Length: 158
Image (cartoon, rainbow, N blue to C red; front, side, top):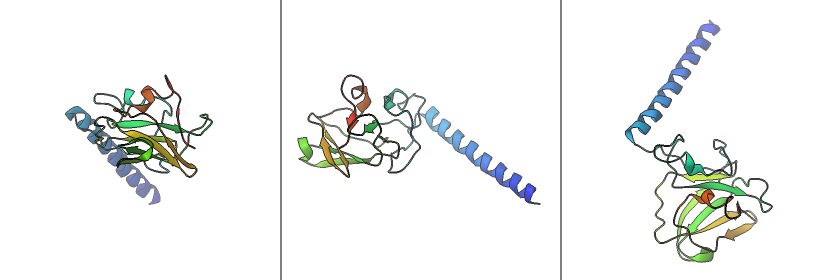
């Protein structure tokens, strides 16, 4: 009796997973974006330090089309820094208006498919339990790893 119940439960679970996978594929085929936002302690992300937008873009192989994404490292820039926060301000050094707050997940990655209006530029800040580190120049795109880790230093938290 237990074997039949276990098989039935396994079958139902498998069918649910297949159905969810088909829905994701249908969304991609229709040109619809999948909602994805990083959250504290979450461990679903991958490829730390890579340019997320290489895959997470319309027509790409990644789930969701990210409008901002990257990886945060510790101050030595050797290990990822999980569960901190990325903030985007209209003014340098945390001045102006705080426009967006993005949680960094349990692997040190942050990402969002939500609309982000960079306008004429936003100023990023990384906040951890040790304080806040500000980026001195504004950004107009969210593909942070297209520069950080390749042509400039990695993003890091205090």
